[in-house]
Image 1 (tube, helix red, strand yellow):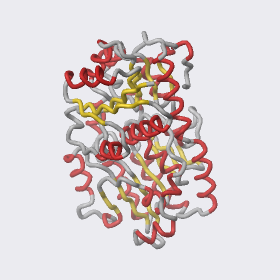
Image 2 (cartoon, rainbow, N blue to C red; image 1 turned 45 degrees about the vertical axis):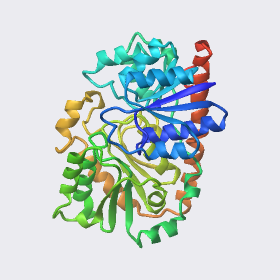
Image 3 (cartoon, rainbow, N blue to C red; image 1 turned 180 degrees about the vertical axis):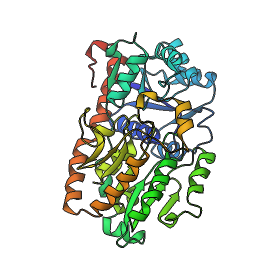
Image 4 (tube, helix red, strand yellow; image 1 turned 90 degrees about the vertical axis):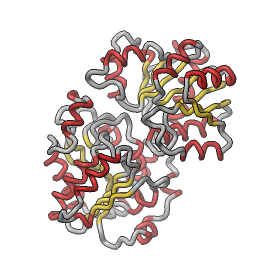
Length: 402
């Protein structure tokens, strides 16, 4: 089978990492591949770290800047099916015109917010099938596009390599490398941008810091929005506890931080399925997650479980109080204000501090359980089988759930 993997970004985000893992797994399973990097204005400024990594692994990667570039790539490679990840509208039009089946992976509710329904329905008409990374994302897609046959949208939850912890330094060595002794370290590997809501994460940490002596927060991620990043940085200027907030750029291999850290935190406005939180989970870290798609599943909770403290971490209410209010204007209005979940997040910091640091055998057991739950091979095999079915024109074999 010949698969053209089309993606808008090949640098440092969760989508980028997923595409890398998908491509390398498909290659190892004997799939003929071409990776098409559809450069959009909002991603053209990003780096090419994963693109370079794939090329070094012997995978052909081409950059597509125009419809003409795309037509030439499709006609030359003659794919049986396209695996699309966040591609621009012109590429969907192109695949549709050339009658190539296209399966789009929805990594989150992008394009499904309030006010975007018409465009979502227009895009869906060009897509052969959808792979949704969480059940919440699939449900939202079917709400926004009620004419979409449910069989054309399946849920395939994300996974990560269960060997990640083994590829990282041992915990004692990781903490020593970072100069840590008895400090309690909370890690957030998140980009500096509106979606990740880093401003609220840092501001609530600073509020809780006087009650949590010895607790530190490190945020490591790409600055997607320099203006937003400067506001986050401004929180630490002269603030009490600012010496315990460490703001860093993206780290290509976050294993050192995850091994050294005592907990992980992510306060997003929205997610599809957070690979960063999943990577932290397979390292055995307790998690502090906002109430977005996938958070309950990652924490091992049921759909009806309320926000609160649980064995594997803390589920914090949605920053807007009600995730159904989600829209870009609502997020923009709330980004630098006291949010609905403010006090809950402050209490979450205190809960993590009260539980303490290295949990020893308990952390090791949690890591083993999570590594078994989030095996990436199961996820990628389901994606490959979905692509095969649509490439062969056998949609009747596709079942919800992959």
